[in-house]
Image (cartoon, rainbow, N blue to C red; front, top):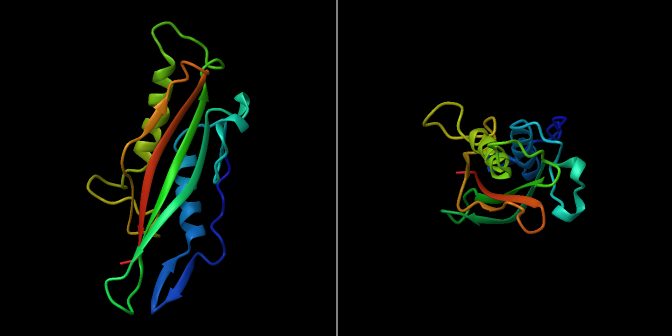
Length: 165
């Protein structure tokens, strides 16, 4: 999938500090994850699985359902925690059955690709999305459905991003 260019103004000047825009952060996270695997289709927004045709799967979508802000000082910079959900879809019935393999192995590979991409550049270092954020990481339970009932495999991986001090 093509890399989406960062928006022209990727930072905002606030209280003497340069804070990245939400759009720049979302774009950087999407570009990182889109390059993690050879997706049939990926996009920086997400669609319902029923709106993604089989020929566009494995599919990667991203959305941000919530964020938390806090200030440690009355007039200080806001520290934001952005909550993202990485959505992955793969059709069970369009994946060839290989002896000794299972559809679950494909889902494992897709999930592992995201896990590897979310690691820091070196062991012990934070994933900073190229220096835009303090830290981005997988946080919490990843839900998955192997498509046993409806042939539609789904994975939802929670990602958190800390911005600011």
